[in-house]
Image (tube, rainbow, N blue to C red; front, side, top):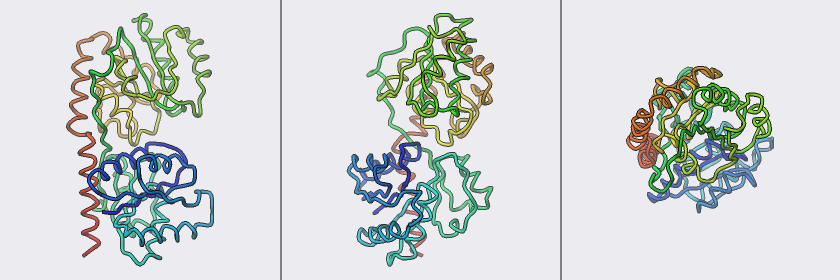
Length: 352
C-alpha cells in the first residue's frame, strides 16, 4: 500500500508519536509511507529522519488552503496513494477536498489519538474508516452518532525494553515523567510526596519532563513550601525514558485530564513497574481501577503509593503483571498488524 499521513501540527505530541510509530512498522512490512505537514514542524522533521518522503503544506493558521489541496492532489495522483490518513481535524478536511480534485480513488482514514472531543460533521459520511486509539475515543464518536462499524479501536503498541540493560532502583524512588503542564498534576504529586515522607522519610521523588506551561522553578518553590525539597529531584528532560523509569520503584501519573492515549502508562508498565494513577482518559481501560484515584485527590494518591511501600512484595508482583499485559496486549507487532488489517479492509470496502 501507498499511505499518506497528514499531520499539520508544529509540535511533537502523542498524535505525532502514534503516526510515526505505526508508519515505521508499516514501512518495515513493505508499505510506502508519505507525510504531509507544516514547514519546520517537528512531525515532518521526524518523518524525514525516518526516511519517509515529506510534503510541506500551509500552516493551520493560513486561510488559503487551495494551494495545499492541490499539492496533496498531485502527490496522491503521482504516487498512486491508496490511503490518506488524517491525524488532525484540519487534515481530515484537506483529505476530503483532495478527494474532490483527485482523479485517483483513495480511502480516507481519520485517526484520533488526542483528547479533543470529535465534532459532528458531514465529513463522517465521507470517511471510510476511523481509527480510535482507545475505547474512550470510540465512545465519544458514537455519542455524536458516528456509525460504529466504521470505527476500529487500535491501541498504540510499544517496544518492550530489555530490563537487564538498566540499573534497578536503590531504596524507595517514586517517579513522574511528562511535560510540565498543569494538566499533568505535578502539584498533587508533590502534595502526595509530603504525606508519604511522613511515613517513609528516606523516600525520593523524581520529576522528569520538558518545561512547557510550568517552569521547574515554580515546582521547586512549591516543594519548598511543603518542606520536602531535600527529597525531590528535578531531573529535566530525559532522552532515555526507560532508563529513568527503570531507576524508579513506582511510577505515578497524576494527570487531571488528557491521557486519551497514555503512552507514558504503557512505558511504565513495560518497565515492570507498579503504576499509581488518576482515573482519566484511557488509563482505567489499560491499568484497571485498583490503584486509581480521582483527579486532584492527593490523599488517595498517597494511599495508593503507601500500599506498595508498606507491602514491598506487591511491587514485584504488580510490576511483573503490568509488563506481561504490555507484552500480550500492547506490543508493537500487534499495533502494526491491526493497523495494516484496518487499512486492507478499508481498501477492499471502497473497491466494491
